[in-house]
Figure 1 (spheres, rainbow, N blue to C red):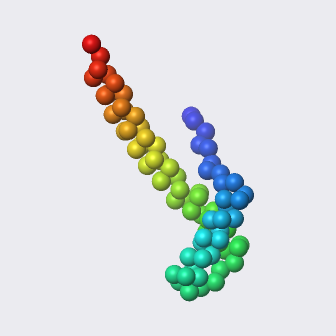
Figure 2 (cartoon, rainbow, N blue to C red):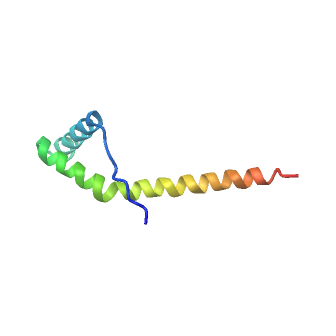
Figure 3 (cartoon, rainbow, N blue to C red):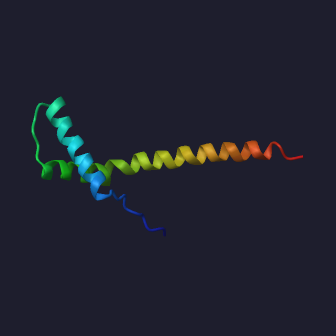
Length: 77
């Protein structure tokens, strides 16, 4: 069984994402949230939602590469 690797975010990127979440709440919902609340929301997104996007990216990459390999096989003599 393969070990599932957790998605990690560098400290600077995490701070930027927290700031974006706070700005979203302020500009769209007209609510202020703190760093802790924004960080907890980010953790939820990374743990529960991001894997779906990651997996879709893996599937898209696989499909793309499979098509390129098929193209390569078509030039075989």
